[in-house]
Image (spheres, rainbow, N blue to C red):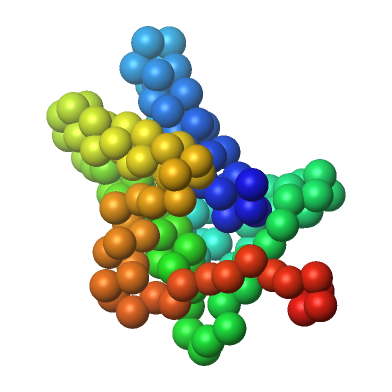
Length: 142
């Protein structure tokens, strides 16, 4: 599993668990969902995520983008993070219908499954927007 796949898996699982906890235990758990959305969004622009260090230490492989510009993974993070923040923020800050969180659940499920399949609707959108595909790093380029 690559670092990017592990990040999607972790983000998707935390989104789904925090949504469930927010729905059935206490609505304050939605702040964790928003935190994940914020981290996705900021990592899309900065290429930095706190979990990457851990994933590197356990030996997961990175991917590189040989072209200039932003990678498809950055695009996915920007799209997913924005959608999560908008839907959760609308419920938390604007007291809109909590059914909007179904959108966030779809994002979480999509991120989770994409860790295993390598495909996510946000990746397709990012590709159409011009984000660049990545390749596994070869042993010589490390």
